[in-house]
Image (cartoon, rainbow, N blue to C red):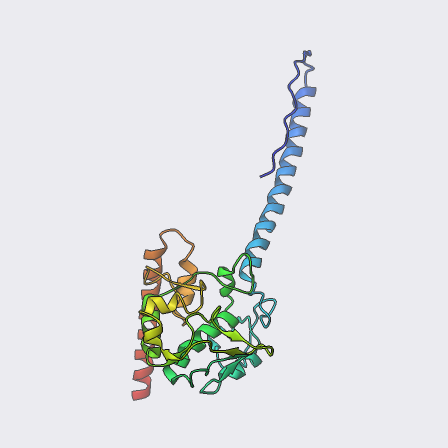
Length: 269
């Protein structure tokens, strides 16, 4: 808000001049209205630009794009193909299983991940590298990082179940690796099963990537790294968001169920 100093009032006396005062007052009011109209227009476009910039941005990591744009030729992370913060060629390294290395980080320091566990690791990698919404949780001090992205409890439960028998040598992928002169990661400790490293699903989701993720108390206003995220993101910052989110999600599910039934009938015919 801009504050302007008020001029001190001075007592003045004058005799009214018929006609002149009314015209002068009308002219001044007209000028004031024009100024306010200009101010309103400028303010509108300033708000519009701010809103657009907030949505139309990516994290500022080494391989992130300046702005999200379509990437129709993605090999993985296709959830974000219509508006992606990563280039299609980045996803080539995720396209084959087992994944051994992404950028300069090895995933197989304790052996190759199981296919089910690897699929969840890919979901997290795709969100961080490619999602146009990741920047909504940008770390204010380090703009390549994210803070406290809300994950659904059921997503974390399924992720933990998929990885519990795989092995890892680190608790945090952010801080616990030992890095050599070539920028490659190595274990500092022995490999143990995920279910020994993490007490439960919540512990895993809130520890593996430092403060990047948190487990939400809501079953709707949270991310699952699938098409339902669009509904959650829409309502995360709105009033009465929980109930509105649930209604919208239910309508979406019913629409899909109906579409599936129509497809099934068509196939039978």
